[in-house]
Amino acid sequence: MKNQTKAYIYAFIAVLIWSTMATAFKVAFKSLCPELVLFYASVSATIILFVFYYLDKNTQRLNISDFKKSFWAGLFNPFIYYLILFEAYSLLPAQIAQPLNYTWPLVLSLFSTIFLKQKLRKGMWIGLFISFIGVIIISTQSFAIESLSKLGIFLAIFSSVIWSAYWIINIKDKRVDSQKLFLNFLIGSIFILMYILIKDIDFDFNQKGVLASVYIGLFEMGIAFFLWMKALKLSSQTAKINNLVFLSPFLSFFFIALVLKESIHLMSIVGLIIIILGIVIQKLIK
Image: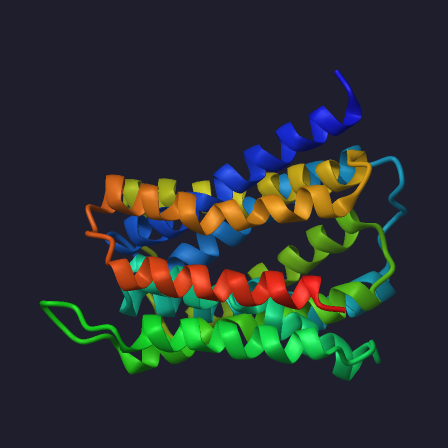
């Protein structure tokens, strides 16, 4: 099998896994609070990322400086990012929270011009404007039973800011991916545990909630990212793989409707299409 074919297979499996996450989040929240879901998921991710780190021949022994480098990254992701994202999902229908969070590629481009001194492109501003229209369409639609949570909308969009800030930190960190990811999640898990203890949240081991949380940690935070990295390394051009990520939000609607029984609103689909159109235009206009 050719490397490019393998790359497509790995990438598609990763995209398929990511498309189930909005559904997995909502299933977990039916049994556990967002803080506990995050703790169980983060610990599970730390374990699988340790396995990847241990098997990676390019890693070096850990030292104190490695832990210092991972302090801020672990604070941003998984702690702050997923805490905000999970809270947004607990307040909003999955079909609303998922596309609003998908604005992160645009925010990342904006941050790259500010913090990485990358050239400011006209396409970025056009893409931002178009995607912003999509956000407005999604945020202003009303549901028959209840209006959308304004706090949930803010948190879903703000999560893209936190995610982009994390990736700026990650880009500047030149350590091997498996090594820094393992430490990031290890430190993040400690932050989450401290947060739970400070808030005096009682640990709940509801079987359905724990299993959903472990699934999130192993697959969304661990295995999917590992497969995506392998796909990028095997692909002759990263663009061939990166474009597949646009399938994820649309596949996600299928799982949301099938498992959560949410009736997908037309405006959710229209808003998502406009957001992705803005991202594509941003990439195309030089």
